[in-house]
Each structure stands twice: as C-alpha cells, then as structure tokens.
Length: 577
Image 1 (cartoon, rainbow, N blue to C red):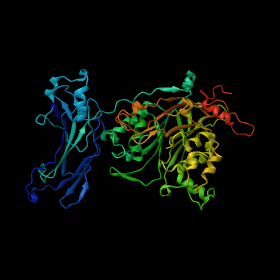
Image 2: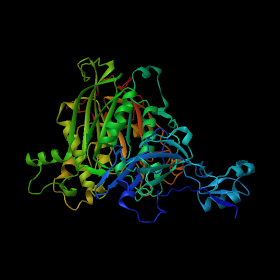
Image 3: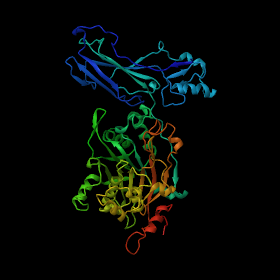
Image 4: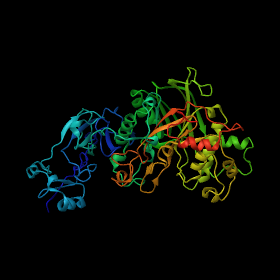
C-alpha cells in the first residue's frame, strides 16, 4: 500500500513473566504508576516526571529521586520525522513508493500522494534508512531521575526505564516500568518581528529619547489549558514546558519598558517570569486573584496579574492592590449602596478579581512643569494599572461594576493626578458598556448592556450614567481609528477583549504594534498554537509625556470637546493649542 508506520512505543518491565515468585524474588518496592507531565519534551527544558512507588507493606509514595531502591535509565530512540504538511505534528506514516515523505495521518498521506509537488519529494534512496521494528535502536543517555533534552534528541522519542533494585543492588526482574515520550522538539525559534504603526503616519526623531514602550498580554495560565477547552491544539504545544519559552521570547523581543501580564500563575512568576525577565533588566511584582488555591500538577497554586518594568528607565515608588470584592463590601457598609438590596450578582458572592496598581518614576525624563506629577528624584510619575475583569459572559453587570470600582478607587486618591495607564483583559468587546464607560466617561442609559439588566441592586445604572472624570482613550483606537480586530482567537470566540487605556491629556500615544490578521491566526485552526502560546494576542504601544498643560474651561473641568480632540491628535502635546 506504499505506507509504513512511524510510531514508537514503550512497555512495562517484566510484564511477560507471569510466574509467581517467592518473597525473596520480590524487590523492596515496585513501581505503581509513572507518567510524563508533558507529551513532547523540549530541548533545554527538564522533562517533568511523576513516579509513584509501592512498598511491600502497601504504602504508596511519590519518589522525587530519594528512593535508593530504584534506579533510572533514560534511552534515546530512532528519528521520527514530522509531517511534511504539519511540521508541529509527529509523522505516523511514510510514503515509501512515490514521494518518500512523512505524514501525520492517512488524510495527509493521500493528499501528499496526489498533490505534493515533486520538488518536495524525498530521495528514494533514503527509504533504506527508514526505521523498521527490527532496525530501531535505543541508546542509553542518562542514569538520573531528571533529564534535560539536548539538540541530539530532536525528532527522537525518549524512554525512561524505572527499575527496582533487589537487596543486593542488582536489577529486579519484576516491578519496573517504562514510559515513552513523543519526539523531542527544539526550543522555540526567536519571536516573530512585529511592525510598529505610527500615529497618523508621523514620527519625529526627537521622540526616540522621550518615548517609552508598554506591552500587555494575557499569557493563558497553565491551570486553564486542557484538551476539552482547546481540542484543536496539540498536547505538546499546549504544555507549559513549550509555551513558557515562546512567551518569554516574545516578551524579550518587544523590549518594552513596562509589561503587564494577566493569568500568571504564582509558581510560574517565581520560577520562570521573575528570573527570566530579571536577566533582561526587569523588576516585577505579582498579585494573585482572591480565590482559593487550585491543586494543579502536584501542588496548590493561584493565578493573577504581574507587572514588570525596566530598571534602567523606571523605579518603583509605590504599589497598591484593588480588591474588587473588598471594595464592594466597604462601599455597601459605607451606605453608598443600599445594604438591603445587596451586591450585584456574583458567583458565590465572590468573583475574586483584582487590579495590581504600581506607581513608577521615570529615571530618564524630568518633569519640568509645575502641573506634572513628579517623583522624589524629579522624574515624571506614572500610574500603571493592571487588571483582569470577570470573564462570565452573562455577568455584564458585574464586569461594569468592577470597572466602576476601579475608576472610583483611582478618582478617590492622588493617583488621579498622575498620567494613567490602565491595561488588561477586560473581557469586554468595543461595543460593550464597559468600553463605553472607560472611553466616554459615562454609559448611555439606553445601552443594550444596561437595558437587558433584570435587576440593578447596586444602583449601577445611575452611577455609570453620572460618569467618571478620568479622561481615558485606548492606544489602538487613537492610532488606527479602531481597535485591533482580534486580541482573543479561539474556536468559540474571536474578537477584542484586551486594551491599553491611557490618560489622553497627559500622555500621547506615538505608535502601536501590528496585530496578526485572521489568515495567520487560523493556520492551526485557532489559538493557542505551536507558534502562538496563548489564546490572547499581546498589545504593544509607545507613549510619551505631554508637555503642554491640558485646556480647562471656566468651570474648572476639562473641556469635553478638547478631550475628544486630544484622543485623536496624532502627536499629542507637541505644539497642540
């Protein structure tokens, strides 16, 4: 049929010996269970292994390398090439009569047979090197419990033999186990370059010394990655051992001065993001959501927001946390919301969402005007808000309530006098009440999100109609006249949920990064994929501090027409009147 199998498999040690032995023949321990925590190993990333051992007494325990009654043996298998059509998938078949290529499925095999251009065919002589069952060789490469694949392992499976030892130190015949990985894949290549689009097509060389770059990204916590949620994504591409490399490469490639991340697990912050970004000159802070820890891959963890900044450009002045649940309860107790009517509809009366607020001082640029916020060293002060709003699609009132509490918290402190960056995953589209409230300062009573509310226990409609005084715009709408087409791209939802809002009277947006179009995002059905490690896309924008004082009307309030002019003004404060 012109097709040969390329699969590799492992087997349990001693399974073929069914004879019952005496106690003297039994090792002190046997392997009860063993598994890899990721499907495809990645070069330079330690292969995560779980090994459960059973003693003669019946007690079970996890061996982390301390058990002296076990030895480990890592083996390297034969080369198994990737599919010619899907390089991110391991081949299962090879055409040995026509194209001599590798394919991941029968469908790909037939497609290759009928349509693959001859220029992509392999040399027929190479078929002699095709590994058959009697020609496959496994080579021992390590005798430790842990192993980090090298470049020599690429396109080869790894096998871990877990062998119990007898009292005299010899290998036991029974009770062991072997487990086999998928083929090893190389560390992800350098991140894709992304073109920056300048505001209004203008750019002044003088701004290069004044600008600072901001990056926002929901990186998709490992807690939420499963085959049910992302059935189209290969297991190995969904694994944290693969995704973490792609994420950090993209973060470093953008060389942003400020980075705001959502869905960062606490353990990932401490073990990966913090040390990796410290090497690139960043300092960071983390704040978890107010939720119960989740048991995930052998330990309890939580996820939340993390903010990083380049220590050569900024220094940290202060840090705050806006706990929406706590602020809401305090608001009720203060009598600002009728206690008899209670809070808006929450899941379990506790959504757990938060905002991480960081005040920074610019170490490069001095604030020269009296009206500009200054740090102790005379540099510009900047308030960076990083938030992740509730995801529940049915709870539009809760989303709006959380945003209202965030804005109210900013307005009630001196933070309102600083240039603001409000970044995050708002789980709200550009036609939502949340977006209208942030950008316009109020929400029309006839907005569909308000009209469909079945109840309004907090008097939310009146609050958002009264509005807020912070003058905010979004980086992408200000530069492009519209938001990015997609910041979240899955099978179930494709649209914009993430934004970088900024104080349009105190900051000017100079440029934004181009976001991938649908033809690129759909190459592997949806996100995440083998090249894009999150279901969200990162947003990047460059800003500078405005140098001209905002125009005020006689009542002492910022003129509304000037606000809209400032939002669309290409350069911002440089000569505006």
